[in-house]
Image (cartoon, helix red, strand yellow):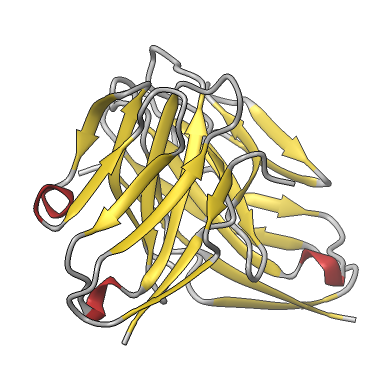
Length: 116
Length: 113
């Protein structure tokens, strides 16, 4: 069973509404990733953190998406104004910090967002 | 750019059949290669990885060998079971790429009893 905990499992929002999901990484893992998986099973990397600092993020994340990993609190991903195209499975993963950059990622069960 | 190409679509087998799912990659540098499995309603689970040429990774009866010459990491299992039905993903990790993985499009394995 995954040790990465994501909540909620399901999220239903109307267009223009905020959608927020949370992630508790596996204990001892300093690096947290967010991916979007669409209905065609394609993975899109959104953002990753090491502790509270952003390592890398894509342009989409910079506009309507916001994410944070505060100290001693769950990480979160929030969509400020949901669009139909945001309907997807949002996956959180965590890993050790491999300075070679070749981390093994451990995923949570995901939050399935449906934007009506 | 860096990418992964794997067997497209679905693979339909019967129990005890031999499984091969092809995975080829394109990457600068020397990537690590991974296989993940995703069951319905769950997140992807790590199966195994390999980081060096000719290194074999294995888990739960599945195995793959890193081949730098053919840029491949094909997944194999000698005898599949119905419980192996799932979506399998090949992924690569690039050195110095902040740790993110690049995933293939997945291959759906359906095993009939």
